[in-house]
Image (cartoon, rainbow, N blue to C red; front, side):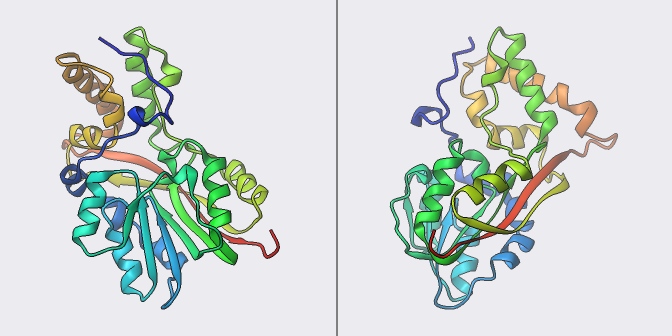
Length: 263
């Protein structure tokens, strides 16, 4: 039976991660991170915060560039993998950053769309940065995985739930996020939406189980398996070609901003 969805900021409503599933189904995230990593351009000796570091793949690259990097995330399982790589990481809520002018840069890749309190996030980042420090990131923007989000709403509505509560991501427009950054004392140097059709190296079921786990957790078996099959059937005409190859329609919001001196 469908259970009522709770507030997305309540801990029990947070997306749960499997490190093995993430390694298998989510490697494309790091594979596509070249442009945003180049935009960060970490320098030796810089103090950098990796916000939503996951298993530390990009944290390690920042460290390899000579920076002093701290990664934070709220997933114990992913952080355990990062620690096994010898990285400096800690469990923390990005909505409640307590750093004050400690970092030269804050970096985030494919994580900010999971954080449903963007005003708290950007405000905390602004406090954590030294004057002139930069905030560089890429995450889901307006229109990201639109077909998948629509299918989720349709499934919930068909089972008598509230479709408005079915999707828990934050996918802003350029104008919305640019205004948010400016309001917290950032000078925005670059902010764009990047459409990115992405072929999956796994099947759609594997992707959904990994990245939409919060959605399926509200169902008990056998309904959970039925919902998964229904989702795949809904998505197949739009996202699967005649050879059985799946593609997802990513839209990334990429930005680079600088904390203005005196703010």
